[in-house]
Length: 354
Image (tube, rainbow, N blue to C red; front, side):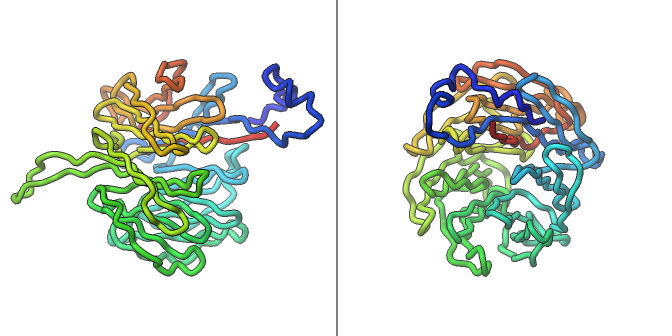
């Protein structure tokens, strides 16, 4: 997918090209990966690859359930029902595999990575597994309780969101070397699910909200989502923003994404067809976008090109028919779109340099 034609100086970069000071490698978005869960029990989830330069999408494979994907050091990491698959990001050939029960989301730190495990083989408590990327080995699974999803790392403090399918209200902080629990932080909102470490080394926690019930167990409503910003060094609360709605996708997909290039977090409320834009430099809600269509199941922001990617389930047969992805300008104006597989669940960007 790498395009060496981009080595040529573009008009917008003439100043940098004429400068006697080397500005260093300039990133661009070389490819977009869309993971798919597939129809329940059909093993027809997989991966779609989109090239933003040519506006072409192709199906890479459709033989496994994929919950999430992450790109690190030229490799693509897939969280599947059978463990973690590692692919070469260029050829998409499998170069490794880790035995992790029900993996969910990743965070990377050089030659090591951490992945949450939603629950064990007996469908009990969730945990975290450390991956040695150089040796290709997985460490022992550390049980946290509940059902953890997102995680983030600041220094040696590993933050893990105790989502517990919306019932959780805490974030666990682990020592990344020893896996000893440092503390549990009550973030004061329901369903902390995604965590991101921003440029200020703060932890931005996205809470989804949770369904409320009466004394007989009947649903009565839902609490709203929130963003809670923590000091990454000590866990103290820095800022809090309450959403006017819950946060969440149509089929437990990618509720939120953080772009370090734009210092921007996006979060979705599928039922309302909304995408929120949160400025992580100023810790404030910047905009609320009314999106086209229903069934949002993943959002991601390409901060290099200023493009918002929104994945949708099929409107008539959401769990059996192919979905689609819309590409939008920062203000929510649709610019293009393409088809993907059944139940698109996560979007990740391959960064290259010219």
